[in-house]
Image (cartoon, rainbow, N blue to C red; front, top):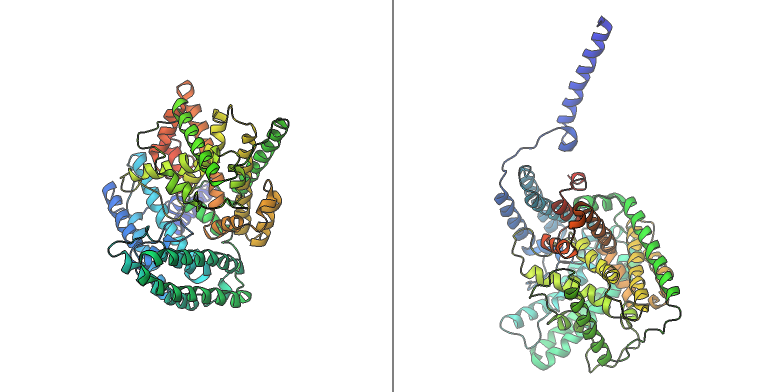
Length: 569
């Protein structure tokens, strides 16, 4: 029986519900997915998404808009004759235009599209979010002294002399713009409270490399273009002046190191398309670090009576070792049917473009010291070349043939880093378990884990620097104390370069380790889904066909599982 009191309670509840709905549906900051509001839909056409993406790419690459070219994203600035305008007003104007693109994307409803088409929608959304993060959070043109050094360094990038056509005039114009760019840097980096002293330290170290590059450029120009040598001198003086300016003001730079957990979490979800938080990632990386160190020590004990690996000791031996390793890996891929080795997947130009480009030539003396990885790859070269050849070089060859307007090629803002670096990293160990070190000196298995452990300690440095828990010095010390044979990292160029990569390119080394974990999760899911019908070659062919995109999207497309993607809207 309904009493008057119960009826009043029911009516009151209904009224409260209407009030709550009204408040939520009129909250301009609410999430439509959470509040029940609907967005204004102007289009349901996939063609409109393709058109919008093309416009957005053109917008980014026009003039000062192509700031995504620097270390934070991995894109390379090119086709600039002079330095863009990185002033606060110019950058604010570019950022203000982003909102229009985001609103247009929001007005496209992909709900009725196929999963691959919806994947492309997420890719466009992630790239716009990456541009937003670059402006709203990083703003490197006003917070990072290394940003301007990056531009100066790219100005010295030229084709193999002699230069052709407009290349001479373009190079001269870039060289002559260096003093102006340095002056612009001093003006734009005007609020020292926004600049972390750690970024100043890294900038000074990087400037040393830039100075060396300009010196090498001058040597090459003396032979083929002596008329340009005079332009290198003022550029070098400007570079020295910039370094002096940074050093003299470094003590005044009081900004915090890293972007902070909240910004890191926003980046994970909205740009990298990770269904994880900072806390989740810390746990995953720590567990992976525990695993690889444990396996390394087990391999050491297993191989304690095996004769040691003998490192190469000359340029000739180094080249011979690389060629043998590449041949071995290629034979293994074909014989064991790891994935389809298409006719274009060949190492023909790999040696010049990837490995011989490291600065070693047969005429050079063998260096007394090497970067950290070379201390291991000089003993067993298979893993390093699997990463570089099978991982990165073959990705490049595939990307050159991928003409999909949204899906094709690499992505800006490190959107594809977990896929690209994570898969290249994963192949080092997983192909070992598949058998490609069988019959070789078993100490090579230790090398696999030693190299993996350096990735995990770098990833932990990434995580803790960006949370604000560690300074650059503390991260450096952690890597030295925890990487296998960390004494090789003391005072090394390699270590500070890697920490520069991950402090300025937020999440880079975390993405490598998490990308490997996500790949293994996908392999587990797909194998469970297919059961006895799972075929490794077919699985990897599907992975590669998906393109260089986040793992959460590849997993959705391959398995139909939307539990990760549903968290990203």
